[in-house]
Image (cartoon, rainbow, N blue to C red):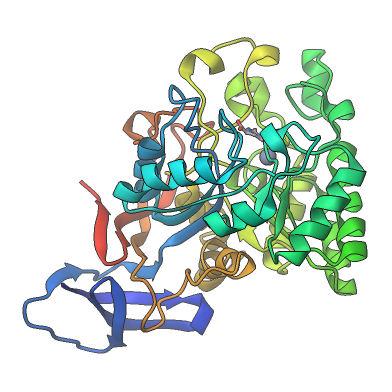
Length: 424
Ligand code: DOR
Ligand code: ZN
């Protein structure tokens, strides 16, 4: 099985390659990068005008199965991933039952296998994500989890969290933490600030996130564990991580397109569609997230793809669930907001979505090195298109970006040498 990708601009941030090259794929692996390659009997892909990059690695996705199949299934979530150029994803454990034992890890893996997308279920930190008893990290690790997290129902008990870090460190697993103090945020629907005042609703203050980021940084420093802060959304949060990195603390962090694109005001026009945890913040926070992406404080761009049903999102703002889908829009939003604005070069945007998350999870993914799995995304970096939720492969249509015109369109997604998505 030979596949020849001809005439594209190959961008492989891990190896500082940005050049017009052809790529030969043999038996699912990258076999050769070079100029004017030829291969008899190879299937050809014409990549002229396209960027050829490693398949995206999205380390924060909610696939919802088992338990919430009305929102999404592994199959529909993976179809959305393929449409978005994502070839490897980490699936969050807040399913029902939670991914807290090898059986559920294996169930998710088996549902994902036929999709062609490389799905890595994250293991829950506590049994049932109830925040009381730690799961069996050894058996979860043996089942193949790349990381541990209670995202969706984050741990509040600091003694337990410290214990989890010590155990995770021994097993060389990163701990991914959703940072928000539950007593401060309750089940509130939006940021505490201008919009919450306008609506007369209680809000989730930025300090609720920042306190827990500070706590996690201090625990990481003390335990030596690798702590990864999920979906960072505030200016001070970014600054705390920046300073911790200078001190040599093993802390990394991620953000999502919504946090470098939208502000709390979005809730005023879009209601529950703009409801997400942590909430959309202020313009100063958006600017600080962009600065954190530019100076390397932020390690990864993820989606926090969180599908919900139309019925759930149609509820009044205080009763609707939090979260937005993102798999089918993340690359275009990142290119539009970060690359086409001149803030980041192409290679840096792609590093944040490929090699950098792969490296922090210890995955042999996110690069086009010879011998690596042939996971690729081919996209037109300049093509304008309008986001249309009705075209999504995801069951979730809950995006605040419907109707937005963006630049950058996925044309092909290839996983282990097989075309798993082709436009049109
Ligand atoms: O907005 C969110 N939605 N934040 C989370 O942490 C969980 C997620 C979900 O599962 O819907
Ligand atoms: Zn979260």
